Length: 177
Image (cartoon, rainbow, N blue to C red):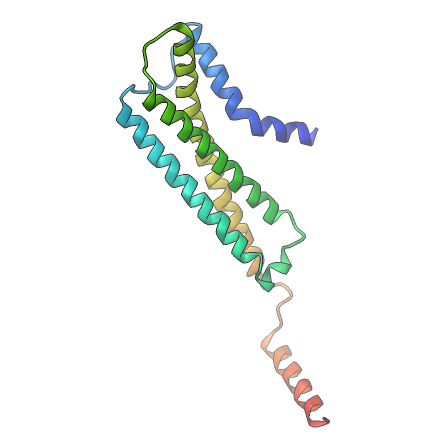
C-alpha cells in the first residue's frame, strides 16, 4: 500500500497534465490561461532552471555533509534519504518543465489536431511540473532544516564539567607513561 502511494505521488504530475489536457480538449475552460508569447515560456524556463539549480546546490551540500563525522548521528534515520528523494524529484520536475517550455517556444502553435493536442499537453506539463517543482523545493528546504536540527541537537552532548573531568583523566593517564 505504501509503495502504491509512493508510485502515485511520483506520477501525479503526469496524471494532472494528462487530465488537464483531456479536459481542455473536450471543451472545458482552462484553469490557467497561458499566454502563447514565447517570452512568457522563456521566463518560465528561467524560473524552472533557477529552482533546479538551487536544488542541485542543495544536493551537493548534502553530499558534502555525508563525509562529516557529525552526520553519524542521523546516518541510520530517514532524514537523509527523504531529503535526497525530494531534491531528486524536484530536479526531475524542473527538467521536464524546462523541456516542455522549450517545446512550446520552438514549435508552431497552429497546426493539425494532433499538434494542437500535444501543444495543450505541453502547456499543462510546463505549469503542473513547475508547481510540483516548487512543492518539492519547499519540502527539501524543510528536510534540510530537520537535518541541521538533528545534527546540532544537544541531546547526548557532554557538559563542560564532563569535558573537564575527561581531560583530567587523560592528563593522569599521560603522567603514568
